[in-house]
Length: 295
Length: 310
Image 1: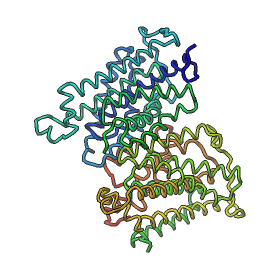
Image 2: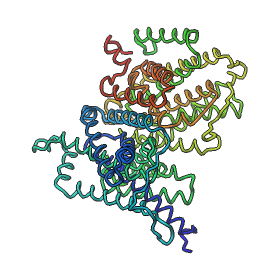
Image 3: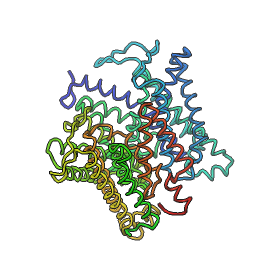
Image 4: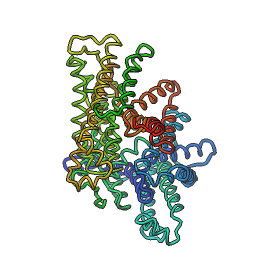
């Protein structure tokens, strides 16, 4: 049997690939955070709760309306995205002139409301969500048996991330968006409706979180606490990557998932904290983050 | 006197009178809980209100103060005042390390880093042997003060809590009104200018951070003695969020705001406790209402109404 650094290669690779699945969710969520931060200049604390909402909506669609996984994959992000647009119009848009900290506090409050209501409605225990028919079964990879669904999660998340990157970096819409990030007043002077751009960006960022939620439902089961567990790790991911680049946040997300999986094999007790330890190291060596621009 | 204005002195006298009279009218254990959280909120306010630093992981220092002081009282049989001092030392030591890391970044990043570091403490608390994991440290004795003044009577320990609370409250007030405190406010108002005037801004920030986390740790130590228990609840990020809410509701940067905030939040929790997660929803609604409608908080609004800084 092949061995790496004295460890058995098979289980090591297997854990790393499982880590990659967590990484897929980190990447999607930190990407949404980065997009929102870029234009709105707020850290969306509600991101985790909206990710959870995506999973809950897909569960409700399945159990109350009989709509399965595939329609949910489109509908849940649309519904949650629309909810995000309402939030932005009603609350967040009123805070742009204030200190950024108020945006953080507001979205934290929204997260508490959404999570509390979900807990009231569905209880604290998880609700299972069946893997869709087409993605059942597993693929034999030689060193491990990979459930097809998990492979799908990694691929779908990667494709979504790359598509988002492409839209932001290679299209004229993306160029307008990036310009508005740099200097909103100037872009407005060119006749672009910047407030509407901001609203739609928030909706899109939130929809990305909801998409991650739908994809997570069959993996982790639907649970009102799922968002708050993941959001803090994603914050650490964002600090490590720095929010300067879209590609950076994608790479950091996948990379940290991989490292977490690796740690789970080498030193299981450490897997919960390894991301935070890495964050400390990065802050000491490169305070602006791996891909961030120095302030 | 001590930097208190005349209206503030009146408010202070009222507060002391209420503290003295309250245990004869209300349940002392509840009042002690309020004072522990009020001291915690005052410590938090020292950072957000006077340096402009939003720490989103203050529960880590409060919670670890709780654990260490509970452990000291139970396993080493230390007396009460030493437990509280140990709580302070724990919070300050942890704050020195975390603060040094967190102040490398500003604004929102600072908040995210403190949150992530606090989550590390939470994981540590679930794994470490001395914290008892999910069970926490239970049946902590109410250690006697100085080794011979018994704290078994609720009123006796009430007096201890009241003294520590008032001591901490006055200490924070003294810090804010010292030359050191003036520099902190200058940093809050205009950091680049403070730097250009020759102040080592990061040293000041770190010192304020350590003082704040130390007092938070002492408040945690006090709480473990009152309730005889130290659990994971006090190191969760929800607890960190709650202290932010307490201070925001009372009024950021006001002297009495955190105290009033602690009274309101703890009373709300007391009455809403039977309704489960409605507590969370209510807290969320208060958060949104505070940020949207009254950012000055209860005491701040009141002060603005009667044109007095409280």
